[in-house]
Every structure is written in structure tokens, then in C-alpha cells.
Image 1 (cartoon, rainbow over the protein chains, first blue to last red):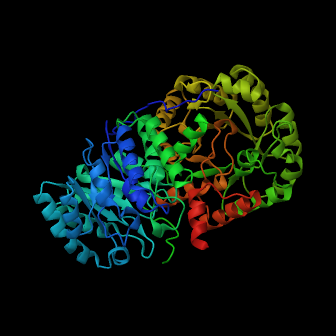
Image 2: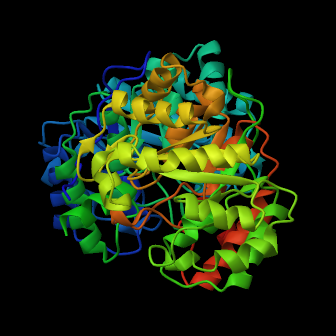
Image 3: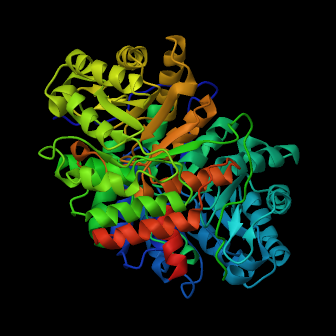
Length: 313
Length: 313
């Protein structure tokens, strides 16, 4: 028996010819993993991801170490990777974080807002509007310094305390981030409850409110196995930026489930099958996720990583 | 924190209002599980699936016990469930199997063909055309006896020996089964390599060859995490019959991977989110899959089952 290796490329009508993957493994992935990863392993992880063809790799977070101890080494890590010839956004929670990022030569930053009051309170101890007020000077100063700014919006489909989140509520906060000057808005399904019709309805409502699809990225979680179907629905709507985590690293600690971020490999498999360019070498990426899984001492939750690794062994 | 419980129903344009799930757990699922399951547990499993709202449950297989020892108790099992008020198809490999099914009062049977020569040889020790010739009298006699007949077609997208399978080859064998008198054709992605464009292209080619979508079911495997995205693409094409396995039981032993059949719960989650009727009670189904996972001594591979079970604990 020979391995099939890759899916047969058969395009579907009306989809984009190329998409950009915003790789979140080193930041969103490792921040939610229990095992401590040494700084040099993180740097090597980022280098391997870039070598596998990823052109945007979210490198780390300048959050206070008290809140995210896994990324407390941001000051040591970032200089090791900042000269890589790709986009390397870093998360900044506030102006203090932005100062640290600017000092280290970051060229792109991201802020992390919530669509719901409950999660804003839990994650930032602020109301939604208080959080937006905190981000406004961060976004303004970053833009003035010539940096690209991404606005994350979490709990866009459901919230563990509030249940389903009204679309108009998500539109209001997304539009506020857009008007503030965020170049890109990443819509997060933090607890993984979204389904394709909901995705399309939110995207349509955002367009109607004046936020064009070209500024929107989607960030799906696989808690209920829905992430890739949702990504396909977003593709059909014209979205061209997809957040994913190599090997399915990480997840939301509030979702209380073994599964989290959409695995980059599962996404790449689908995109390759659709004949959509990503620039990613799936074999190199799978090898990288296997290498990181060994460091973490547990198998990758990505089905593609497991299936391809099994074939090699 | 309260559990969200269920996705918010947001329909997508152009999808069917209702679909039928063809539950394959007791047959395709258990046939590929290593742990032996007692006959009375299998009967209870089927009763619980019916109580959870499933209207078609493939009950067992009248294959020679030498080939599928897990289902060697078909003669004992089927009488325990045959009076349930739902469709209870059974797999029959040949005329001898059909005789056994007829004797026991089966009202619906299925034959299992291959789209590729390699798998026909491996699974049936016959060429594709020899296998079709073997099925012809089974289908004819079943139809004469007033039974519904389903034709399974495996390896419709890729084959572990041959790689990608040409669409025209799949169309030829599907059409042969349709012309033979199979009421329904179930297109199997046995090794899980399909992607949404490939799914739509095959469905379109079948329609052009005279096989209407109303006679087509789809049977996806989650080996590379693609099953639900493919199901969504099939829904968009108008397919209304979806094969799935409660709790993600089973899989193809040739795929050499931990993952197999699309989990019924993951499918139901998506369909509920899309506002599409299935008649299935997700909580009852999840509880049933948890109960079976306990019997098998391992967690369910269904992400929805794991996420919902975690919430309860």
C-alpha cells in the first residue's frame, strides 16, 4: 500500500485563488499549553513554521507575565526571530505592552477585545466599552508608528456564560475596532459553537455595517468539530485570511475541552484539495507539529498530523 | 458558568429543510472496533439510538463470520430489534447473505461495492465488474421481495493503493449500481481524503450521468478532519441523506488512523445550527455514545461527545 500523500485538487466555483494563513501556534497555542516550553525551542518552532511556508506567524504576547506565564519570555524570544522575512505580529494588551513591543522592533501588533460583557469582565476585568477605551490609544499610537494593527474579537458566536451572542452586538464591537483603526479584524469563535449559517450571517451583517470582507479574518475552534466547515463557509463568503494553529496547539481554557484551535494542517489539507494557494509545505508543517508534540509530551490533536504521522511510521 | 448546550440556529440560503441520517454505528462502527460487544449490548445500543430519534439504523451484517467476527451474532441480534418502528437495513454480501436476511424478516438490505480495482480485490477478491455481477441477483431478488436496496460504493475519492480516483470511474460504477436497481447509492470516502470541491464535482458528474441527487447518500470519514466540511458541501448540492456513526465509532481498518467515520453528534450539531431538522435529540444521542464508549473502554473520538460530556462532569 502506498500513501496517497495529498488530496486531489478539485476547485469549487467562486472561491478565492489564494488565502493567507495567520499562524497562531506560538502565541495562542503555547499560551494555553500546560507544559513549559524553553525559549530556544519556541524560536526554533517559529523558524520551522516560516521554513514550512507560513508568511504570518504570531510570535508572542507582551501581556504581564502574571497573567500568561507561558509567554513571560517575550523579551528574550522576540529578538531571536524578528529578522525572519515574514509578518510577525505580537499581542499587546495595553500601552505598556505596546511600549515593550516597539522597543523590541515589532512591526505588527494585535489587541484582544471581547464581544461579550461576561468575557470582557473575566478576561480583562472591564466592561466591553472600557476595554475599547483602553485599546484606542494603543491602536492610534501603533498606527502612528507605522505598525499594522489587528483587532481580535472573542466570543463572536457564543459565550460560556451568556449563550448565543446576538449578531448586532458583535457587529457593534467589530465596527468600533475598525473605526478605531485596526487594519484587520479577527472574528473568534472562542468556544467553538459556530455553524456555517451563523458564520455567513455575521459576515453579511458586517459588510452591511461597512466592514468589508477584505479586512476580516476568521478564527475558529474545533471544540464541537465545526471549525473546518465554518472555514469553508467563510471561504464561500470571500474571506481570505484564516487563523489556525500548527498541530491544533492550544485552545480556550474556558471551553474545558480537549480540543481548541483549528489545526493548520487540517485547513491546509482542505485548501490544497480546493486548489487554493497557501504557500505551505504540508509535509514540513506536519513534521514541525510532530516535533513540537514530542516537546509537549502528547500527540497532536490534528487529525491530518496523526494520519500523516501514522503513514510514516 | 452555564453550558451553552446547543448552537444558535441560523439557516444558510438554499439548503434542505430536513435531512435523514443513516446511522451506521451498530454495523460499520462496531465491525471495525477491536473490543467484542455482547449481543444484548448491541440490541440495547440500537434501541437507544432509535429512542434518540434516529429513523434509519443499519443494524448488522450477514457477512460470513470468518470475515467480520464482530458481527457473527447477526442471527441472534436482528430478531431482538426488527420490530422497532424505524428503517433497519442490514448488509448482505451475496445471495447467501440475502437468504439469511430474508429468513429473519429484514425489510431493507445493502450491498457493498468498490469504485477501485485494488479495493475490490482486497475486500472481495474480485474485479469491480465481477463484484457487480455478484450483486446483480442480490439486488434483483431483494427488489422482487419488496425490500429497499442500498448500494454502498467505497473509495469514491481516493484509494490507499491507487491514490486519487478518477471521477468518471466512480460515475461508471455508481451508475451500474443504480441501473441494477439500487434505490439509494451511498458514496464512501473510505480513507477520508475528499475535500468540498471534489465532493461537488462528483455529485455534478453523477447528475449529468442521470443519477439524481435524491438517490444519493454521502458517507464521509474524518481521517484528515474533512468530513463535516464535505457534508456541508454535499448539503449545498442538495444531498439529504447523510451516513454517520454515533460517537464516531469505527472506521476503515485500511486507513491506519485513529479516526474513522463522521460522528453523528458532530453532524447533528452542524445541522441544528443550520436549522435543519433531523429529529435527533442530541443530549440523548451523546449519552448513548458515552454509554457505548464505556463498554468499549475508550473515549469517543467525537468532539461534540467529548465537549458535552466534559460539561456534564
